Image (cartoon, rainbow, N blue to C red; front, top):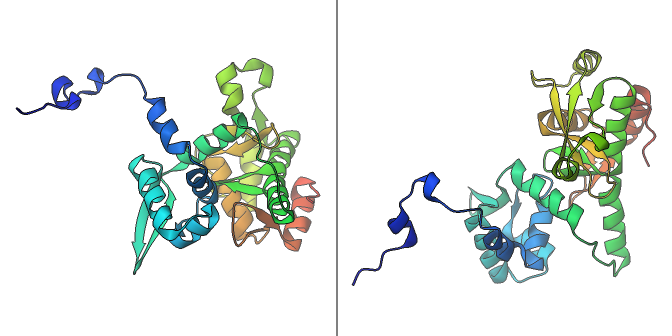
Length: 251
């Protein structure tokens, strides 16, 4: 006897589908090795399976199984370069998911000097998929607000869901003129999106405006990526530039 699947019984129409299956995604995320892989890719880069295996602390064969599970869940996408397969987050929504989960999760204990050094660097300045986060990200966003370049909705004006995730804002005419003059390739829209930073619990600029800002900071040689992980380092040119343009004195 032929057994019909649930999809065959109810059809494929979206209106016939049930509520979001959070448990299905939760089962994929409920593994420390897989979460370490997602965190390693949180800066938007693509990495080979061998590097992700080292980040997760598992054997290459085990890493392949984890990566396949993450890809099947729609969290990762793979590209082939020559003989090697590189993995990256499936899009900015996955990066936002990681940051949102980080705001809800307890912090892991630091068990070594190396772990402590990496954790401090991530909190100081990091790339969150395609925008700047950490203390530098929130300080730079605050400087844009203080300079009249940007406005952000007050925390008291938001509901609980907005306060947890995105905070709306607006790029002012002064902000558009000033940032465009600096060379930022800004999108046409003036409505901006800000995330609540999970380490600082303050907003940092995200969305297409945040992407334009981070790209510009790299192009100016004001920031360098760490060899591994999401942390970014402020260069000497960056210290001088951030002080001159935005009044910041980063660590």
